[in-house]
Image 1 (cartoon, helix red, strand yellow):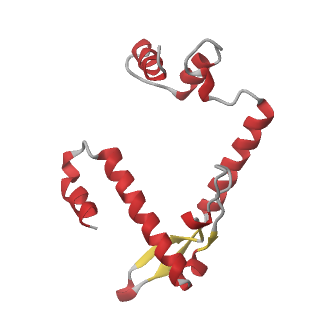
Image 2 (spheres, rainbow, N blue to C red; image 1 turned 30 degrees about the vertical axis):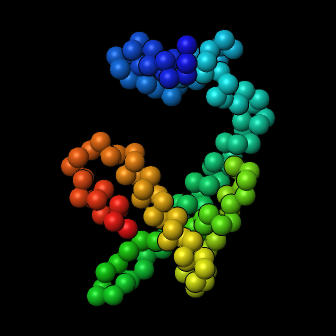
Image 3 (tube, rainbow, N blue to C red; image 1 turned 90 degrees about the horizontal axis):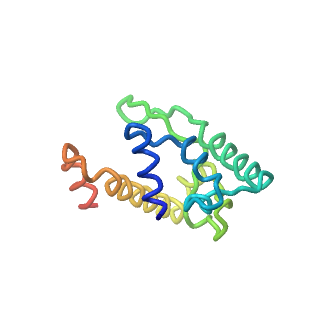
Length: 141
């Protein structure tokens, strides 16, 4: 059984709903195809969870900025740019957004990162034809 088949089986047993808690429970069995998708070393899992909490904390802070014509927008205080990322998945540093905005090269990287995220959003929700004009606009960028 593949991981996908295992996930579909869990959903089928739960009226079509796939709950993360059910997936973890199923994955506890070392013979489950899902077992290898999880970190079972509690110390390492706790470290990874704290890194996730730190990222959520960093991304939580926003400032309100007044743009032209009195328009007010909320922007993050810290942002990550892909050129700072290392090959280690838990090394995703952030910079002050104001520093990125002042640096022509970093700003270009941040803009490219934003475009890549828009493309990923399109790929994730491309089946929603209600947003076809948006998908077309993203493609045109």
